[in-house]
Image 1 (cartoon, helix red, strand yellow):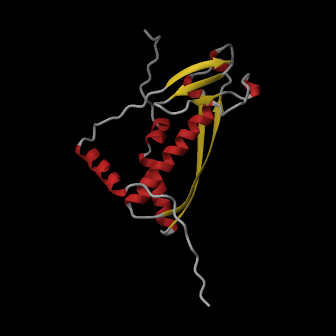
Image 2 (cartoon, helix red, strand yellow; image 1 turned 45 degrees about the vertical axis):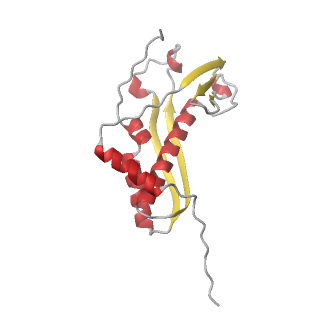
Image 3 (tube, one colour; image 1 turned 135 degrees about the horizontal axis):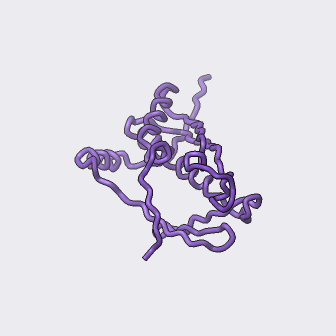
Length: 179
């Protein structure tokens, strides 16, 4: 008697659309998109961020940081963005390489510093001493490719991840009062 292991694969993306999108990037490498968010403070440390026509992304702080702990904290949302971006990239690279994925999970954790208390009377700190001090990511990935190829897909996606590169590299940042 022969036994077979049945695999179900994650819902695929449009490979032809991906290839067209990649070709457009090669034709105009300096092209840029734009992300826009409008954040409205609701009270205490709870805010709603409106993104397009979607339900708002709600952010709070834990009780020990004077929030109500009703939803994720800003740093957790930032890690969620990184996890989502890495997942998109891994899926895109796997699709480009004709690798079908049956499982993809990303586990993220970061050490964060806020001894300056957001600049409200805490320790005197320089910007490099605040925020994420180290980010650690583990990827659980399964598919119809050997482990070495899956590892290369993850490394390749990390290298090209817009959110990972935003976190790794200094980005010009401006803040001002609205008109």
